[in-house]
Image (tube, rainbow, N blue to C red; front, side, top):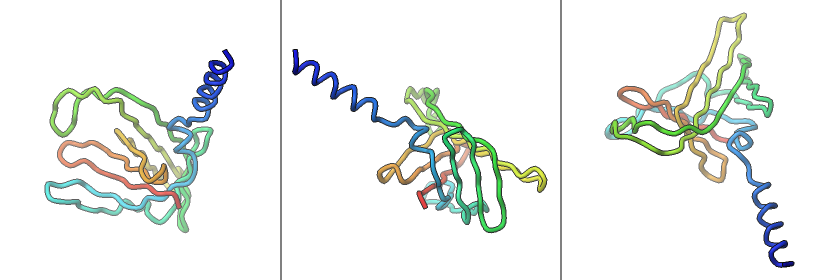
Length: 146
């Protein structure tokens, strides 16, 4: 009985310590690069947001700050079930994570609305690869902890 109780306590402690995806996203992120995937490589492009820091707050609000601009707004993320594989058009039953970042500076008439269809963590939760699926070439965005 004591072993069973000890085992259940240990399992409960481990499960309560696991973080969900929102907890892992909270913090500061720097856009390290963006590219379109091509048949034989990558076509890198500039977004204009490589020089600043994105901050995702626990409350769901978000901010971007650089030496020349400041945007604020919100972010959200969750799981969804994939309906089809955008590369092959075949049915897809994977559980995917989406990420949306909406930031604006209304007085300067500037908005940023990124809706990533899926993303994955890498390098011990310190790197994010977010993907926008498009007809033709998917766009990949690489974020790192500063």
